[in-house]
Amino acid sequence: MPEVVYDSLPESLLQFLQGEKLVFVSTIDHETGAPNTTAISWMLAKDAQNIRFAMDPRSRVIANLRKDPRIQVTVPGAGSCFGISGIANIGDDVMNGVSLKMVMVEIQLQEVRDVMFYGGKLSVEPQYEKTYDPKLAKKFDAEIYTALQTD
Image (cartoon, rainbow, N blue to C red; front, side, top):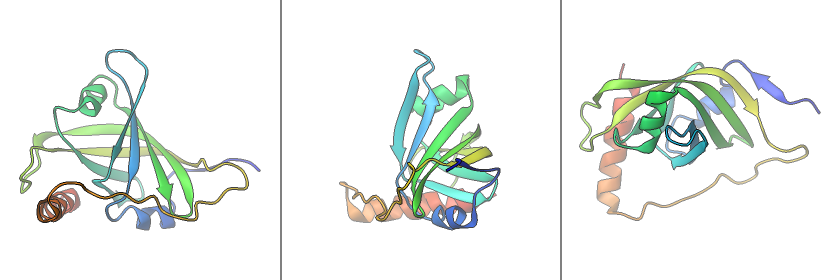
């Protein structure tokens, strides 16, 4: 079966990325040149061509993207596993209305691949829990998702 490649987010994936989901962001390490992967949850599909996420400006992901803006996002969900490739643009300022010092990164999609192995289907969405104060988590989530939706 040939690999499925899209030039934008399929509708099911666009809808899936409208709220908090576990995704994996891969960049090229600015020191070693090796792949570097980080799990994040503050990501939102702005539209079928652009995805936004929030990240601490001191993170390794941001240092990596400042040197090489190529990025891969792996999304286990919407019934499969998707690899989204694109070019990242890091916002100049910290995100307004967010208590944490975060920057917005917007990815302009280049391609989306269904990377699930042949004959496989993702039947259960990966789950996680936040291990810090639930009220604080709810506050940060609300602030960040509001900022990610704002142009």
